[in-house]
Image (cartoon, rainbow, N blue to C red):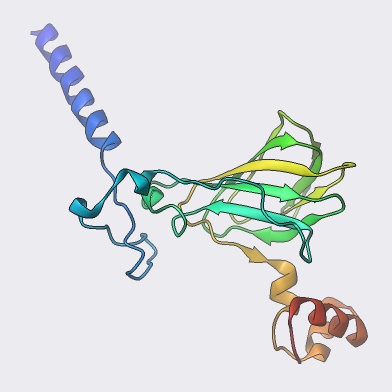
Length: 208
């Protein structure tokens, strides 16, 4: 009898595992997004290409931050819809950086591939920062304010993994200076002078 129970449990676990592996919902990007993700494409329209992302290559780093993010999020890679995972490639030119930002919907894992990046995150009571080299991995807990700076002598590359198909991002610089809030109000809340605020607003497309 005990052997039968063992075999039953083994079969149950096997079926459950098999069902979990094959349970997916390829995103129908023509429909609306929601907190639970996109609606599923009809099964008869799903193809292998929905589960393959091509173009995981270096992006153009000629921009304000001297950095590029090549994302494979749900809007780029419909097969990850509902699976709680996505990836990206980060390339930072010499002297470039990813400024302070958060991912409201995901924890981030950074895997160093090339060059050197000084990265860190902060909480209300502590700062955690480290200079990373190839082979190093650093985790940034969900919602924590964090940054990455190329602190080496050449380009830097890292692969990123997220615990959400759509991690979202809020860049502090863009939030503060890429808006239409009057410059004097921004100055009062940041302790910068108005001239400095206007200068930075011009860089990030802000007005006011």
